[in-house]
Length: 552
Image 1 (cartoon, rainbow, N blue to C red):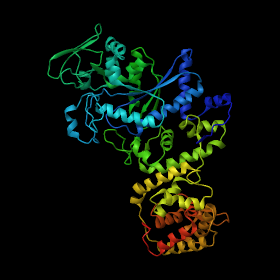
Image 2 (image 1 turned 120 degrees about the horizontal axis):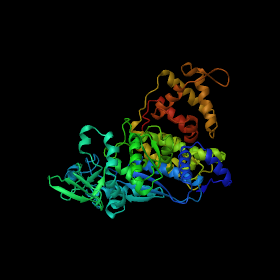
Image 3 (image 1 turned 180 degrees about the vertical axis):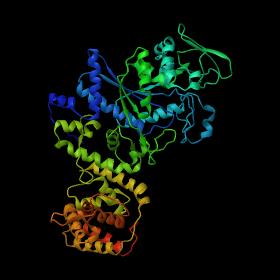
Image 4 (image 1 turned 45 degrees about the horizontal axis):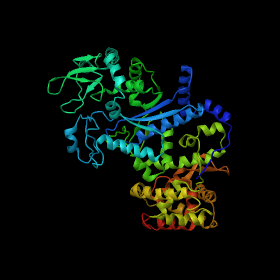
């Protein structure tokens, strides 16, 4: 797979990056300004993403890493030579406050409620030491398949190894300052018992939400009543306690020196709290980017514990990874539904952006999603057949393997083979799988009424006058010629090239409903050219004869 990288002068590229309106460059310029205010850039710039392993990682988790990587690459273009790091931080020391809906045996986990996730047994395979370790491994496996450059960090390791000991001592020293930030954000009952420290009971191993009886900054200890009522004193260091999630955000930023972190809209109201805690602990709050949340098909927020929406593996079973990256790039501040129906469009949009890239000037290229998806080095891929067309071809031919699809492609797209176009071959496999699982079960054919039957018969006759090798544009024009002569399908709000009425979309909807059992599809002329005129006429004949089009 060759690259589309062009010989563009570094100065021209840098100038375009400084004014690019693509959101990763807008965010990257905030980090540049941050460094300039410091008076120099002789340090590593740290990007961070957070993950709560209370359930299996979903696409939203991946999106956070993908989007942060896009900002990181944009920054590296703006500040060449400045070292950067990306830490993917897992909050795996959090207590399991509820049992996820998508585990095999919920009863198995009940005894471990409120224990740190890295002390809860793996309910899936027993392959990992804990539930937290299992979910961390699932996240890392996927991020590795994408080739992300990142460093994985575990809260359990950071707390227990002592890496967070200095910041935990500082929280004890500045306990009153932290409480002054937190208490106004809480209701009366919560305020009465709140503490930024969550001790881990030495008796039960559970994460305790209990008030502090004493916080000793001098020896960095806390005193509280354990679950059985016995007064207990623990050091705040060494993994004996963890921080509540809001103080944990700010403390982590201060401890690590984070420069950029994005998070979902649900964190937006707390952003000021995170920042103030970070500042109170002597840190500088990072630059932020708040993105909208992903929704499932019903418009509900995607949840790791519910397991609703798409999983990472599910998307990749039906489409290439680049299409998922595109979906993450587009309109990050707009709420988007994330379910199976969005996949085909994302696939075709990715290849459309890829095809446009070589024709664009440097400013347009930096705004093209493929620049950000591929870190400035998008591949050169020629895709003569769209994914939507492949799906329609599978639908009409009832293909169960790629060889059937390639039979049509080889006959009607000269010079294209699986060897010359491996990307198309890959998409053919995805199309068959997607059709079998999602399109075929939802297909609903209907019989044509009298007007529709006459229209289809006229269309078949018209197609019969065309040469066997007619291209998609010729066939599309033939369709329009037929429709313009039928009153039902005349759209007087549109004008044909001849000056008469245009063609209503109802004509094409009828074709798809009757012939393919679908509500819509790509240009039918392009499909018919790929499927073949004779095959298309046979499809029409079966529909007019009342045959079963759901199977050949």
